[in-house]
Length: 345
Length: 207
Image 1 (cartoon, one colour):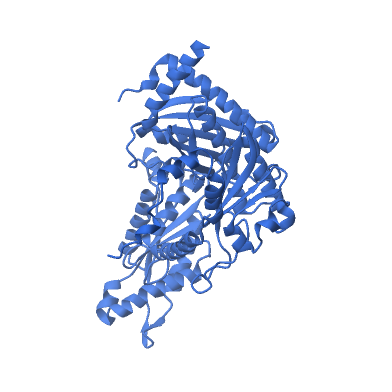
Image 2: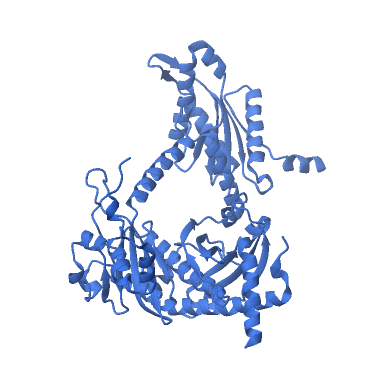
């Protein structure tokens, strides 16, 4: 192990130094040196805007030495500073006598410094967190020190994280095969829309639909064609419906459509248009002519059917009726209230 | 643990200290904003952790989104303060805090963080200074602006069972601005607060 030259520390008396600092004999040299050399920006300003202190970090980044800044007005030396805001911020520290802060998230920087990593950075300006520290003496705030911390690294990783999360969020709500919303997103949309419809007394229609004889398509042409059949329905649905409608893949060959603003009649009309659009012939895998049909069940939001599970159940029952009735058709759910009032008569 | 702060005379003393401290906080806010600030009588509750979420009920508030800012403090007495703003877009306060008339989203957030820092700082200092304690503050940060603000309180986080919560509402009548400050004094601080109140009462009796 390499050893230090013995004589370099031999005559150091740490205890004596600590006493010197405690008695006030050393601080001017040592603590001021620390403030000057520390790897964060520190400047101190009086209530009238005169700069009292300007450390080396700031000297290096502004290329203005203390002689050029100290004793002069901050805003005159740096006309690019957000003066109105900064004056108020400092004034509040003088009044309240308490710390104040800024974050890069809201204010990217106080001073515009070039990012000092031209090779690996790729950020146009250093991101800064600032703390405003009141220097209180005899119960009075004599000056305010501003500490500027380089948080460009944090900014970079946060930006990367945000981008990744945005991609993941988009992926997590889409069905991989068709690109339309998946069941999870549908549930989210419906939960929100049921609340909205309740609160604002709005209406909406809900369709549940299913490709007829899907198993036969798979068995006859293989699963790749089956996949194309599913994509075909999604594509036709997107082309036929309004942009405000929501189409989601609910299960294997099952889809759910949310139709804002529609009552049962309007929803049934939309379902009929959709059924008609899907049964137009198309070509799968470049050379397989196909015609397929769908069965649809229709229901709509009502005050007495004000939850997602109930509505999906109704649409499912109507869909089942379409299947029973011979497929390739639309059935509208009949609320039981009508039936029971008929019974009462 | 039994709650040391339930003793009535100490509770009264703390309520008195808090009333004065919050008054000072209101005055500080008024001075920074240059506007008249109204505040409610501060409420002090010993809150069980399972009930913490109910503190976010803002029954009388509008349907606006709520913006929540948090700021931890630490020292002999430590805890966390939350500030709930009625509405997340304080553009009508912009001129009071030195912003352009139509502040950007970031500027609006900064306004709320700044207001929270001022109000929380004076609230907390107003409580701990009479008790001869000193605290430091971490920077305030946004918890976001979802209407279900109680979702912010993590039920499975931390080790506390009870906390002392000081709850006060500030209003700027002419600006339709309203906010609420919740100061959570952590369980570990309760004993220290209890002792500080005893010292405070002794000093009062001696003078």
